[in-house]
Image 1 (spheres, one colour):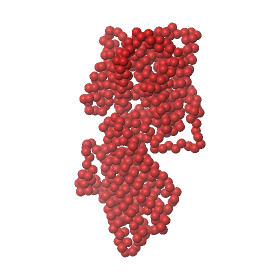
Image 2 (tube, helix red, strand yellow):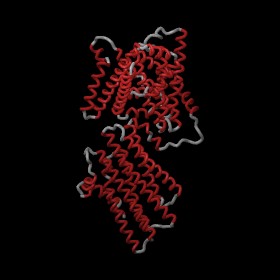
Image 3 (tube, one colour):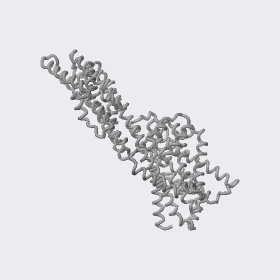
Image 4 (cartoon, rainbow, N blue to C red):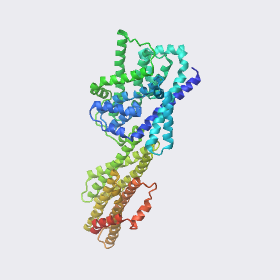
Amino acid sequence: MDIFNVITLAGGLAMFLYGMSAMGSGLEKLSGGRLERILEKLTNNVLKSVLLGLVVTACIQSSSATTVIVVGFVNAGILRLRQAIGVIMGANIGTTITAQILRLSDLSGDNFFLRLLKPTALAPLVAVIGIVLFMFCKKAFKKDLGQILLGFGILFQGMFSMEAAMEPLQQSEAFGNFLVTLSNPIFGVLAGAIVTAIIRSSSASVGILQALSSTGKVTYSVAFPIIMGQNIGTCVTSLLASIGTSKNARRAAMVHLYFNVIGTIIFLIGTYAIEYTIGFSFWEMPIDRGGIANFHTLFNVVVTLIFIPFTGLLEKLARMTIRDREGVDIQTVNEILDERFLVSPSLALQKCTSTVEHMAALAKENFSRIVVLFDKYDAKAIEYIRENEDAIDRMEDKLGQYLLKLTQKELNESENKTVTELLHLINEFERIGDYSINILESAEEMYHHKIAFSAEAKRELAVINEAVAEIIDKACTCLVNHDSIVAAGIEPLEETIDRIQETLKNRHIERLKQGKCSVEGGVVLLDILTNLERIADHCSNIALYILDYNSDVSLFDHHEYLKSMHEGSKEEFNRLLSVYKEKYYARI
């Protein structure tokens, strides 16, 4: 085996890994995040958890990806540790599907359909269909399906390249002697674990072993311990993913490790006990792809069946390894927007959307608490409001960074549109929070400087506060429901608030001129009115972004839309403007 064979082997492995990644990415986009949403809704039924872990992993072709997502879910508090254990077990079974697909190369016979099913014929055919769908179809569904088929074809071409590169090993005496050393179970397990840890994929390392079996020199005694070690090596990905996470997330990664290590020990003891007492007739016979695939599946199914009754013990072992300290872990925005979710853009966008909705809820709550302070000052309430504002600021900062990282992923048109919308919305809600804090500071100034408004000013302020509370509520509602009807009703309310604010400013200036109000109180009230009007402006912006997102028009012109409404060309706008004038403006 010369340097050119090594280059061919490395290229084949690269194609294999890329093909597997392309298949998984295509399946993930085709699912639209549904697989991850199923994981979120797990119950305490361990059998259902195992089944779901199996199905998800079989679809995305990577137990490492499933386990990383599970670690992220546990870190975010979506899954409990006990639920995660079942999913991890199922993921180990699901990852064996790749090996079972690769065994198709062993099909033999002259029948046309059998020959068609052989990867040497099927892989190029599937790849051709895939590239046609991917390059010439415009619909996202067909393009994603094309990517899956293309990945399938590339995966097998990589396998063929690896097999071709390993052909010279058939005649190599040194290679045969090396394989004899791997029949030692300790060396075999270590070799499997190290190779898998390096390439970060048990499916890929099993694929390499299947390619190596084409030399006819890999025996059952060599393959068995290597396959067990490969299951241990795949734990490296989840262990790395758990660094810097909550205790339960790190425990989930440890469960993955313990499951495979203890399972390997049990299987080694059982397998070699039978070999040394009864003996396996096939022990020193060459193993083929099918034998490797079957043992890989058998190992994971049997170990899962052994551990299903002992999930509680696995959880206890993980808790003993990573012990609780005094105090309670506090869930942070960083845990909710876990970077592990970036492997699934549709899922990451769900988390971003829910975080923006939480920002909106905090902004709405803060405003409702602030307007009460003018009647009843409460230091504890102010502390609570400021904590909420800090949370809003942290969310805005984290969401901005997270969404920018998401733009570096492969997104479809709808996902790109959502990212753009969310980047606009987080800025709007952050500004609403800032203007609310400005009003809070006005309340603090009034309290500390013993400033009081006249009865007339209080009555007028109560009216505009009520109108602004309604527009914030509408902005939050149209955000959560993406409701164009609610969004369209915000602009006439914003226009009403603008007119109220302008009228109240003019009246207050007249009161100041007539000496009916103190200068200090007048300045504070004018500041409050300005901040209220700006909050309404940002609510209007939010409505426009929702309308833009829901619009079928590729370029939604915000200015033209507003201009047409303000010029009276929109019947519904005029009707609602009349309603809000009666509801609020008429009262001042």
